Image (cartoon, rainbow, N blue to C red; front, side, top):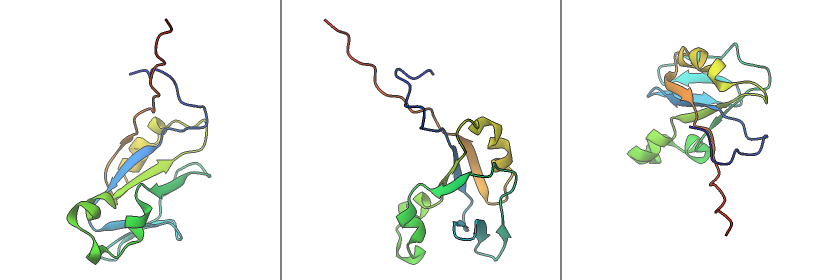
Amino acid sequence: MIPAVPPPGHIRVPVDVKLKRGWRYVPERRVFESGSGESFAPRGLPRTTRIVYKAPALARADEATLSKPEKDLRRYLQVILPPGVAAADYVRLVRAWPSVEEAHVAPQVSLPSPPPRA
């Protein structure tokens, strides 16, 4: 679907990611870690790509204090690629990571159409 009003050019479409249960991303080390001790460093992404949690406060929280819905929310990340790089070109790579349960191109942001002028 084509947006009614395209967003400003600086807004990029990321790859949305849901981690498998037991995995987390450690931004300081740029690695994924599992509860069983496995670790995985993502490779093959453009140099200035960022991986961020959708709910960073939940990602930093002690998991034992979180409700079941909060534990689920902390599994969601975004892979934000540099300007001019299409998320669709990297979805297959991200899906292949051992820590990823699912990944897809995020929907394109749209602003509402202005009302018709009388």
